[in-house]
Length: 163
Image (cartoon, rainbow, N blue to C red; front, side, top):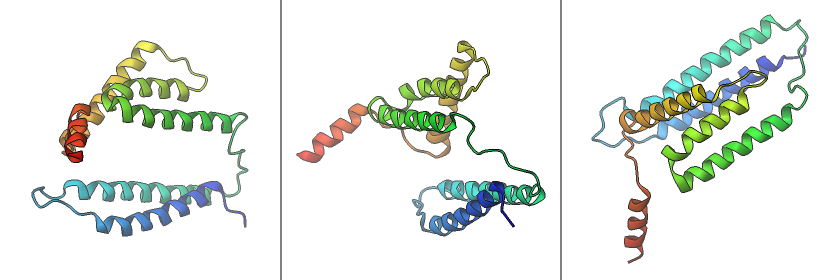
């Protein structure tokens, strides 16, 4: 019996969940933070991935008689390679320019990259990009209590470390 791609993906997802559940046991939390704190985030992610994996396994078993389409449509590998290159460029730009400057531009670029054959208007894309940037910033600064670090603060810290 040949396994469908959905079933294989679900099994790999469950194996990954088991690995990350084991790895997340070593997460340390500063004493001054209240529970659940940052320890809860990996467990929520693991739970969501596990539920999705089980759903994929069930879908793969139910549809095992239906013929699968090719995984990559024509030009799909090129499109995925381009998207990966965009992620790499975004991470490099974020290192030099910071999160707040690069994320809106990257979000607009990803919206246009993922649009497929749909038409996308620029103004709504910019609004979505600004909202996504603001929500992510608030989530990390207020939700996860990660303090933003300015570039000048980093340079001052590097200079004092060399003295």
